[in-house]
Image: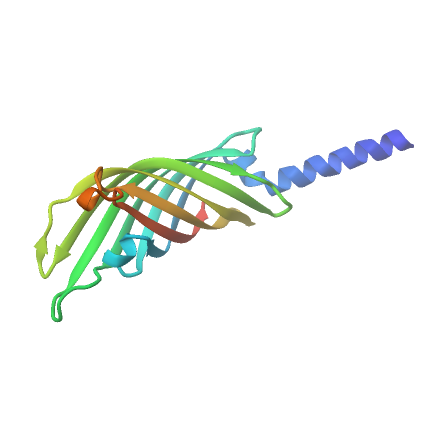
Length: 189
């Protein structure tokens, strides 16, 4: 009798874990889209106002581990701060990132930690005059929650992008790094 109880408990546990990660087991590859607000912080807050972003992603879910690899291409756009009256300016960042996510299945939701590295192409335009673009290395990290929506899954995540925009500080000070916090809402198919 106790043996049957133990087997039933094990089967229920396996079924619960499998249902919470069914999208990962049934679909090793997923395509996703997302977008949201991009909030500049630290030195970047002096140059940019809060902007928006969009991302396209491809994700591979490991079949046994709660691990996934994700590649993404993103576009961020900001209005520039501190311009003279009557002058308009925008900044844009196009990024390509490779990330690793480690999930923690908890019933129908899956909280996860994510981190990675990539390239960020930055360009600004002031009153119709474009600056030359520059591509810089950067890292990112954050946390999110993924949840099942039937045949698709949704996610909400926040990350910190740290773009190494200058090797030397101005006047011998600290190096200037562009830090942005994108908050993304999206779906995976």
